[in-house]
Length: 78
Image 1: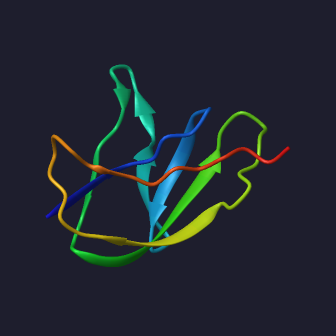
Image 2 (image 1 turned 180 degrees about the vertical axis):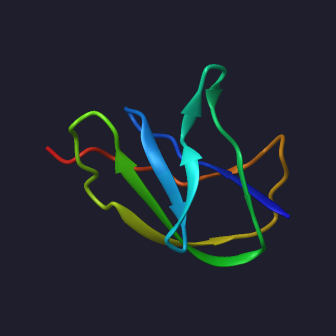
């Protein structure tokens, strides 16, 4: 298994390949998601009326672990 987080200035809904995975943050901070090794389409839908600059990113996730997950960063649109 591979691991990643979705840092963003706000809270949002994360999807992998169009399948909803949960919110990017919980009460303890950034949530760590799991996926198989390979190329994935990671999406983020903001929850508080904001929009992401690029709401869908295609990334290759490999060589990660739960302690050092890959960061798939999203930026809010101006």
